[in-house]
Image (cartoon, rainbow, N blue to C red; front, top):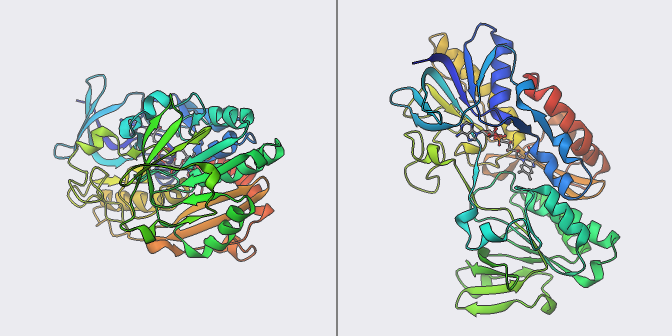
Length: 421
Ligand SMILES: Cc1cc2nc3c(=O)[nH]c(=O)nc-3n(C[C@H](O)[C@H](O)[C@H](O)COP(=O)(O)OP(=O)(O)OC[C@H]3O[C@@H](n4cnc5c(N)ncnc54)[C@H](O)[C@@H]3O)c2cc1C
């Protein structure tokens, strides 16, 4: 059976970053990366693609050109992970063993998590930047007015701010296209707040009021009826007084369909689809067996080490970390994982516990405007001094838009994936 010193599952943001950082530190490491995808996607720009201000093709690169020199790439899917035996079974029935394992396969999109979603997605105005941002763009461009509904998933999702970023851009696009006066923009979220880090709320509330967006809290999407063009929600608030809304309007025509269910007719519907850890992770012995993190990779939240299998680390979207799942978070997690595994190789303990939950959400609030939300565990604001010394990142800024549209993609391809940032 083939054996490698370090096996990395997933050649996405986390997998490539970790591999590049390892090889920068020590060229002699024996690293294998396993990922079936021939393409590598810069997903943060999909928000801009959906809003017709970034070219989809520029978010894609050939995976083969990104695998760091010195690492071996197996273009297969991992089917089973057996941490007890240090063994991975691949889709082609080949198994391999490892000394150290980095788990970074991201999330899986669960189209069957909402009744009617699989049939509805990608047609009739039902779109998602998580799945096909080009269809979001087409939907917005062709939108002629009515209810434009943007929803938030009830599961953990990557980039929790993405569902509202596209809504703010859509609001401006619809205005430019002359249909804003005939449109109700609705944000329906199962949550009780627009954004969890309080410092950024005033700026977001300004945008919501600027466009008179109706925000419906405690609205968990349960069903899409694509024939009737209706979306159904369960109201999750414990009592009626909690069931608040912002900019409530009669014209959206919310209809009560049961004791705790409502339906709204949509003319376009943008979703953050339900997401979970890939099935082979859920089945594996490194996943949380129960509790709120069930199925996600179990790790120490500061060192990213699995508590049961000390030679296994997980980072990126798959890891059960109480912070936002973003590429920005990966950037701070990767050096900790690399340092800890190098410590283990050197016969020391994996003592690096430096990760404090840093994540960041570039909240695009319009064309040419952005609020940069940076935070750590406990939703505490945590700013990179490089930026926050010069810019008040809690306010909408043109400079932050330039960062999102130009600087961050450049940094991603040229620095982060090369192990330099
Ligand atoms: C619309 C949208 C907007 C976003 N905006 C931002 C943003 O503004 N800022 C930000 O920082 N982040 C943003 N993100 C989130 C960011 O893209 C992710 O957090 C980041 O890519 C996570 O990296 P990862 O390596 O964990 O997963 P990914 O980059 O998704 O990579 C996972 C890899 O694992 C592979 N894989 C899956 N299953 C298997 C398997 N069984 N075997 C082997 N390989 C497998 C996949 O092919 C893939 O290549 C956004 C995401 C989306 C969708």
